[in-house]
Image (cartoon, rainbow, N blue to C red; front, side, top):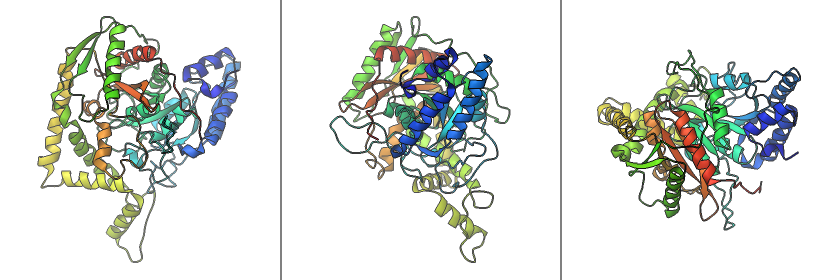
Length: 493
């Protein structure tokens, strides 16, 4: 039997059903991998007992030929999803020790489908970051290293850096992520895995610690496109507890997978070229265009003229919503409380937030409070919402000419930890290709497509029409099959 941790979600599901191995064997193998992977700091909480309990239930079900969609599949859960009886911190100090009494809708769906939980995954604090360096519990380290032998630890991307590192290092076959401005797609690109952000509203936000409510969307991260389709089916569906949830049936995305793009048009937005972008990114993009053409697609150039305004628009709207969402952390109801001697209520609020929030969270709260203030609301927030509408209109017009868009996922490969942490603007530029689709609420996916000169993964992004996850997955599959990406990080940890 090959190493069980090398199996994909589909490989585990199918092998378990055929009787090639037991679910407990799978859970034990991944539990051991999680324990051995501690140097990466991907997991904040390990839950081997949860994975084993789900595995034993799956084995009992197999004895009576009762299978659920994810029977025998253990997963990592980003520590932004509330899990009943298990600590949920959003990688912050202010929520340290918080143990929910309820289950998020997404995790309830996954566990109901038969999945077990390997543990809670590290992330940028409150999902605010692009490198997983803002976590109160220390940064996650990418399992990848530069070919030239440099010892600099690399960023796994963010905010879902724990999820990307765990999947890339074979500590989990799949994981949940959340994407507000690219936090599934960018870390997937940095670590050589796949990840999809579905249409806004496909996956319930109930029980997910909020960052920016009009942008936050959960999605799966896994080794390949098929696995993403399998997990997305289990995660999606209407939730009456979430007012933004779409009341629509869940398509059978895995059954609909096809790498044949004949009759489809792939749009290439001319604005997705930025100054200083490495030639390797451009070369990979051109290769992706050739692959799409080889799959039968017609290539058309399109224009998204307001793309240049997407990043500043995002960094007005997202902090504004964050400043509102994070106002609930006041030291009164739950989480951390700082109570200086003789402090009044306002002083307790201030002391609690000063101690409980990290620098990046404070920065975004201050930006958000500023743009929502009476003197600047119209000048910044109202104007940003108008530009957001123009960005969405650009996509609508582009999709009159094509079925999906193909772009790079990130403007570079993974960078060294600490390389950009002192310059917030340089860090924010990592989201330049992913933010527009988030502002428009569109489905978008990153698939690994090549390596740079240092042997580090590079990803290509597919953006689709609203609710056309199938088109995105199919285009991703066409790229995946032609790229033949099978590189993996050499084990050093």
